[in-house]
Length: 119
Image (cartoon, rainbow, N blue to C red):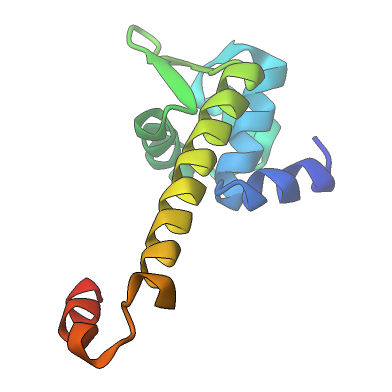
């Protein structure tokens, strides 16, 4: 895993540890937490908490059993999800910002209460 890859994943909202773990899981395909810690360089004390958080975010899947195994969501699927989330957020931002524009009379004195209520 490269520093550039870690940085790019962080730009997408991953933490440093999540970036390292995800990259390690792409290589390992499926692994125990101890193996992920060894390959990723993330301290074992943080592995389980980070993996559980990544599961909630949909970055990894947990395979319950003895031992518990972890696998990553395929990179294409992950990027598709992130792209969809970003596009949704951008569309919501555009709508909200357009609603604030003078053409919508948001800044006229009679509408100040409505504007304040939005914030």
